[in-house]
Image: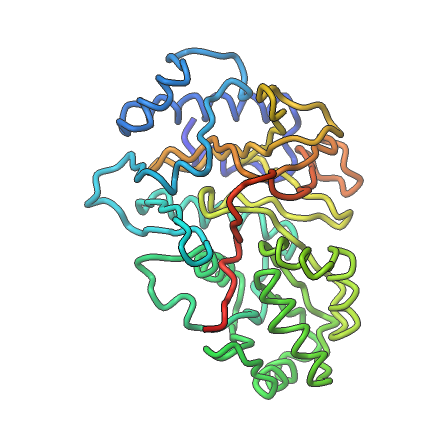
Length: 358
């Protein structure tokens, strides 16, 4: 099935049986496509014992360890068709993943993101505050995870400003003027979790500034590992922001540069949701068999998007718990889950590509 046909489906209204049919049909096609167009992927899947036509469900699609994108350059397109190269975040000295996109894959990522996020923010674009600095997106040929996230979410803003300057100092006066101009209207805010906490919330608290963001909708993701080091829970994160600026609608999301576009948004009940266009499987560490609901395992992420690189089935280095499917109290169909942390001894990696003081 062509991806344009899949995108016609609503993000959270496809039930379990129909979702599995779509997943298996599309992922089987992508697996064979990448085996034919990426020699390294074929070698890897051959080594895993995969053969064309194997399996009967999405559980049987071969999965690539996320670390492989740090160690090999995996492309299913000629290099002269590379439209954009995206890089994962990492601390100094760490390797980064390089994800190669052609125009079709990049476009489908944007369309998918728009379909998912609009379910939480509505169809209309809003005045937008980007809780970061403008220098992050200046190199548009090679995006970090942080820059890609900012650029992707920027499409939801009618008018946009950055909350910080390039030294990560809060532009309080500009923010006040922006909020006054759009007083009484919904405001969209986007940022990476650690950046929001350290350079927005903590600066507001330190300076005793009070901004009225009671009409705001905040979408944030990545960087929880650093906040856990500061003993900040998700509940405290939301409560402190509410105290500092009145914001009440806060949505976390789970995603990674290796599967841009297919993000997993947090609903009003605090659950992360797989959309029609993606899925998650929790795998047991011992034998990689699928976990039951309520059982902690390593997260495998599935995406129906990528044709320029073999990133449709990835075993992450994160652990999570499947909470249920098609029965979240928020009313959205699909699997819903929580992320519990990193697997032990995994390389420390921050999806938010967090800012470090030089």
